[in-house]
Length: 138
Image 1 (spheres, rainbow, N blue to C red):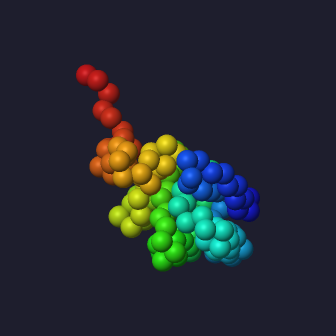
Image 2: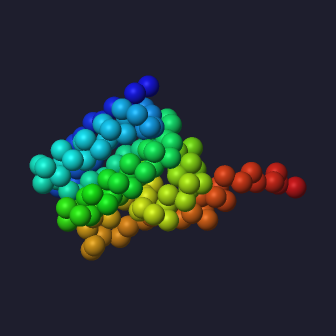
């Protein structure tokens, strides 16, 4: 499934919902172009929703880092959220959370743009422990 990008604004933050694959090729170019269009439109506070991304390769991760850096240079910020446990596991394994702010819900991602709001980021240890099978009760 090719990458589909759908944007909407929430509380002055541009939320980009990505669906499909984000891999080397036209998909990463589509995301780069969308980020450049947002910057041109002075929309530099961006939240990426990766919940429906079914495949993300190293080039896709690099493109997200590029988006973060480009938005910062334009005076903005990029945050990411995913409510998909498999997607989150891939991002944690790629040490993505150490490079970029990741959030478990859209609202937590939105809150990250407002310093006065409480923000819940992914607790990597808690997430890793949730993936470990629990022994049956004796």
